[in-house]
Amino acid sequence: MYTVPDQTGRRIIVTGANSGTGKEAASRLAGARAHVILAVRSIEKGERAKSEILAQHPDARLEVRALDLADLSSVRAFAEGIDDVDTLVNNAGVMIPPTRMTTGDDFELQFGTNFLGPFALTMLLLPALLSSPAPRVATMSSGTANFGRIRFADPQWLEGYNASRAYAQSKLADLLFATTLATRATERGWSLLSTVAHPGYTRTNLQTAGRNLDGGNRAPVRRTILPSQGVEQGAEPLLFAAADPAAEQGAYYGPSRMGLVGPTKRVRRLPRSARRPGVSEPLWSLAERLTGTSLPA
Image 1 (tube, rainbow, N blue to C red):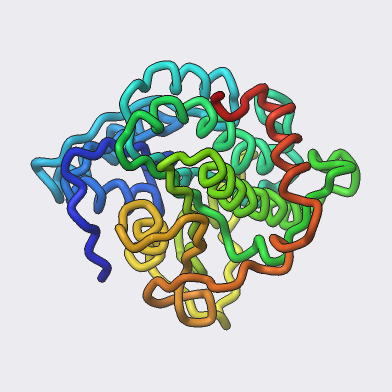
Image 2 (image 1 turned 180 degrees about the horizontal axis):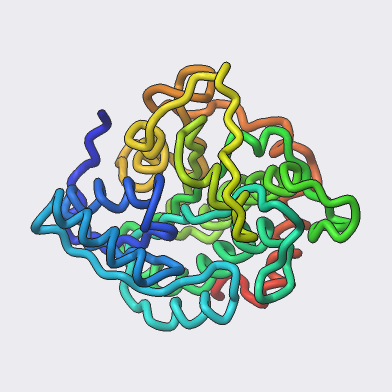
């Protein structure tokens, strides 16, 4: 199992830290002596996760704060309460709701929660991050980004809604966001490191939670013919992206075996979906317009 390097003195925000890869990442970062902020939609679930992490790491420094990435007012309120942070881990997300659903700001749920919320959060936290001697933003994408495309004519999927394709769009947007942020940080001479990861085929409640947002009790969709892995292994690309001194600017990390399972490796070539010309800049401009946020001067 990957050993997280010592994080003493670092203050790290992990979104979606009450379950799945977020909880695993928060636990192991806390075990490496980071001060971890569990940014969660449900304070009750966040406090439960905090207690479970403390049972493993009694000396962990943890705090729970409310953050709903599907509500830009919540994103702003959260960011206003942060004046000291070294690393932001954009992990939280939602996957394949049963029908087209929207955020509090009337964005398609997956595009809003998985991409626009984290984009706004990052922009709002950048002034605090840039005060750190070694700031870092690690963003969780997905292997489904390989099959995504940005529907600029209808990014909110008002027509012909397809939950799986909308999810792929949102995770491709995350990948493009992270790599574009890396480019812009380098252009501005910032010390900010922007990295991105994907968990391969990791078994978490993500496969169930989204499908049951309408109160249903549907079983997760799993292709059992494919190899899968537990959250302990599945969180490791994100942990490497968030904490390892060997992580590189704009680099993309994932499992080494077929991109599905196994130890972490760098994905040397971005998927074709992320290499299409004329996508990154319009996407960034769209996100700025929709969220009302942008890079600090």
